[in-house]
Image 1: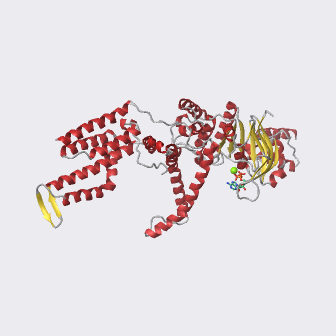
Image 2: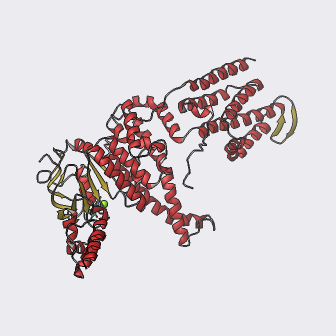
Image 3: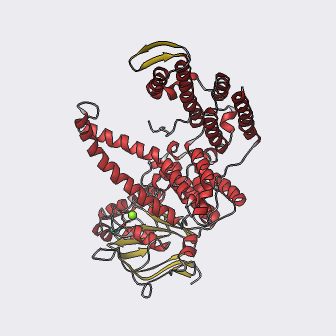
Length: 265
Length: 282
Ligand SMILES: Nc1ncnc2c1ncn2[C@@H]1O[C@H](COP(=O)(O)OP(=O)(O)OP(=O)(O)O)[C@@H](O)[C@H]1O
Ligand SMILES: [Mg+2]
């Protein structure tokens, strides 16, 4: 239980894992922008192939990605069906009250479905192959320009990395407290919503006190180890570009060329 | 004066909004390169003393109280110099692990001191190896045992090359084996790095092995001396509610039965030897 990780990182060894987190983060954003450049079936075909290529390159089982899409599937289907039944154009096959089933509608429904699914798929590629800490580092790099506006990026990233570091600790603590309350007869699973919510309160109080204690101890330890604010510190953990990062670069270039040319068809 | 690495002179300290000071008119000194055990019951002010030594807390009145560490007098502008010289290993292994991985945590003190990265990489690798954690350099804290986390804490202190290492009940959350391993490790790195060690502990068997014992009671230093002398004062120990170490307790019980064991016997082995000799004489 204590091995909980936030995000959904899964260990692996394909080259996707070796790509710099900054490159992965940027490519993911870029891919999502590219999705919206697709206007015809050739465009959607190209972007779908590229999306699936990224999925395959992770070397992970299809189930991992299905798990990513699953929680959203109803929302995706609902949106796609809205498009299908409310949009008219081309040949009309069926019409009743405000609903229309037309060839344009069907095609648009499929496009919306693809758009949604691809966004989720590429984000999943990013989150399952990149550790939360690496994502935080990549975010910090992307946020760097904010330093110009006097935003303390170093401090923010230290806070994020400490928060990530203490998730498992506090999770263990939660399990301990739950077990302690259970052994005194607390029941976290039965009863209505209100009853269940009530049983959580006696758990939150000790957890809150625990985290205060952790915070106090930690700040003492940090100060005792010479921490005097995020100014003037050097960094041990750094991100370095490598040859592997050329892969996402070419991926983006080729994808851009394809998307631009399919638009002209 | 130069062989005294820490010197407290009439140090009084009160926490904000408390009635009586946590540390009252405390004076003592600690020899360079020595191992000092600081004992006393809960709330007697031991942790407060350790925080005063590295300037995490400052005495009520810096005019009347003087704290000197390695020749530097504690003042507002010397706090960071003093903190360079003193590292503390705290009690809870989890709550002092700042970094995301073992190496990151060991590097934390170096990052704070703005050590250039190339140097940092070498120092971290060395310190991690010194405490026997080289195989875990990239491990996350949630996958380490308490004892391993304390090793990492020690590595983090060694990395910044302090003069004094304080253990504030650092082994109290570990099992007996983990505890012994940490103490052995501290003994080794103390010799290798010319450290002065102050160990705050409730384990009087451990204190019995120190060069010097300081006994605190309600913020006051009530006794100070070599373990043999301190633990011979059975009444004093009982009065402040501390268990005396096994060897001393046995010696006391034996003397109650008219069997006198020489003063110089301080370890279990010596006691066994001495008892065997007595047996021969009878
Ligand atoms: N942050 C604080 N604010 C107010 N009072 C405090 C604070 N920390 C400690 N004290 C009080 O100061 C006194 C000395 O505490 P200290 O932590 O130094 O004791 P200790 O000898 O280390 O005890 P223990 O063996 O339990 O660790 C205690 O009476 C304690 O209640
Ligand atoms: Mg204490």
